[in-house]
Length: 421
Image (tube, rainbow, N blue to C red; front, side, top):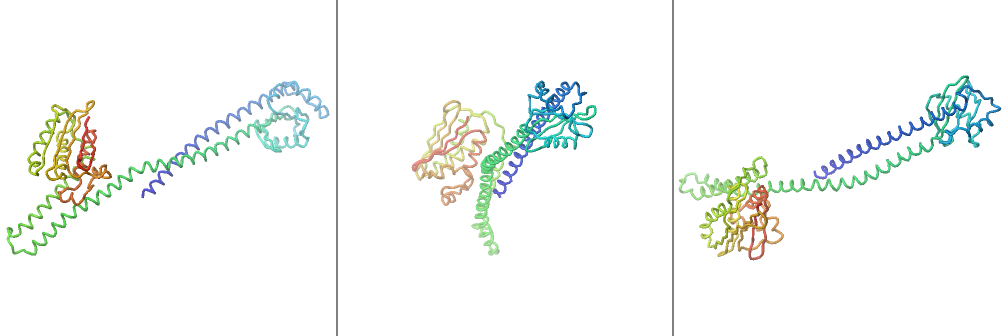
């Protein structure tokens, strides 16, 4: 599925970039082509004007026997011809050459005749043709008793356009290769969080189903026992009923935690954040847990700096403290110690540290203990009635308050840190 998503993203990106490059290159080529054609037209117009002035306004008519000598002298007086390689021909109404004005000594009469035929085939003000590997532009002007044709070599201009096409093609292929690699890399980077979220969601569903399966099995088994002993009284079946109720309560707690996590993920369900005295809130939770801690044979040590204010939901942050203290009690060693410290740190940050002297968490598990349903020791967690959701809920609350929550562990002690701004 993710390979298909990667390929679709890559293909879409390549299509979009290719379209943009085609539009950009086509625009540049079109502008360059038009500018080139306009320059050629302007130059032909200048050549025509220069020829008209040299020929007395176009009214003169040279005889074929005199054309070469007089044309050579005229060529030397026409500065416009120095701008480019060009020549002009004068023909009669039957397109027979009657006069040549040229400085090319290598061009043959056959070449001139062919050039006239090309112009006669399409007598326009501006046209082009290729002859003997050279690109010529020409302009035909009607004059008394014939036509005046100006020819100009535009091979260099044509090469510019051809080279521009080749350059664009090479650059486009090179850019597509670079874009393909870059798009493939960023596509993988973009899909990675989606893939990770999908895998977590799938694992979450599998874990939730597994956790619900156990109490449902117990309830179903005990219900079968009740049905098999239908003659007994309710008091006689109390043992099985208590087991059903106990598992029902476990399922209720699990579903409530799952719903709470869902609400935490929904940004629309954000509670109202107001300033409140967190020192008093933490102390109230500690006092409510004090009897439970002593009943477990543990020692409670706490140090709460008074008057520390934070902005957030008092109820949710109380729940964070309760989760951390409950976690410290569950995973502590017999006759162990639970420590809690609340103090102001550098700047305006307030730090809460809850520690227990139970068996440490292996380093490879420290960063994963905040994942939903994750348990470093599954058997021990089930014995304590845990589902692996408490720390996930606590961290979600802290992150919603733009705080930070992390853990540090050694073989003798585990510390949980909550830092709020």
